[in-house]
Image (cartoon, rainbow, N blue to C red; front, top):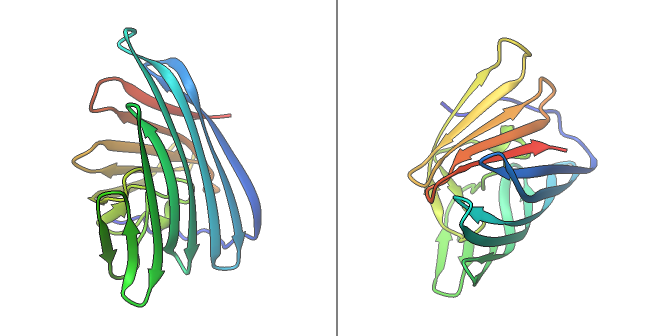
Length: 193
């Protein structure tokens, strides 16, 4: 069942910052800057992680991306990710044939209104496919949402073959936390600063 929340269109700049934990140990931060003007939205994301899996295997992960949205659809994307010592660059832009996604290996064109994993606004989490901004791939998802009885907030679960992502929002739509069990092991947990 898709998320049916309708948030008011905001105008202005908003910063959302999270401390990121892996199995209750701090490993970094993830910061979003969202600039809205009418139906246009620009989102900058900056994630910096460093730690050890199982307390033994060191890792370093960085991800920076800039997304542009118009009328509820993703219209452009630029991202750079450092993962396992490899840099991944993604570029996407919309045109008459759809959203063209380019990475080092290939170019894909996606028709229709395309969306990413827009955790920052749960009203954008709709449909059965979302773009992973790390690698430019379209991911099949099932999105389920429910109202919290205790605080009138919203809970959203995004299920995919890659991972299940659990998200929590306040009654007024502010994103508060994220939890996801990683494929490689460990619970990733965002807590809003």
